[in-house]
Length: 136
Image (tube, rainbow, N blue to C red; front, side, top):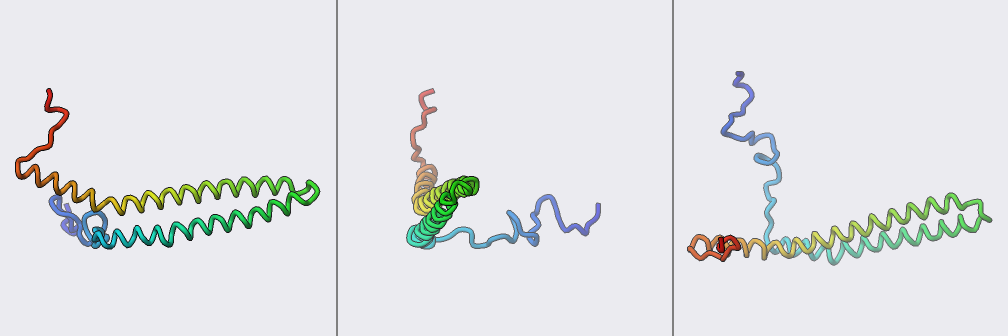
């Protein structure tokens, strides 16, 4: 086996990035940073996303009306624009749902870690929460 690979079974390749080496060094953020990120989602990203979705709805409404007004000759294009608009609306709604979920997750992470820490402390101190398996 060649020794120039620089990798051993009991070590990770620190210089290559990825899950164990390199990569993002500041993944864990403070509660204040998480709060600020949730606020940015709520104050800017969600409203701006909604505005962009509404703007596209207004623009495509005009296009649909224009094609519908062409004495029936634009009906094919009108239906295509309507389908594209429906798809756009679904994608905007999915993004809004995702943003809401991310905002909620950012705000609840602190309490999740706190509850986990309290649970670990209770376990270390010998205080154990009852389990459903205790009755067996």
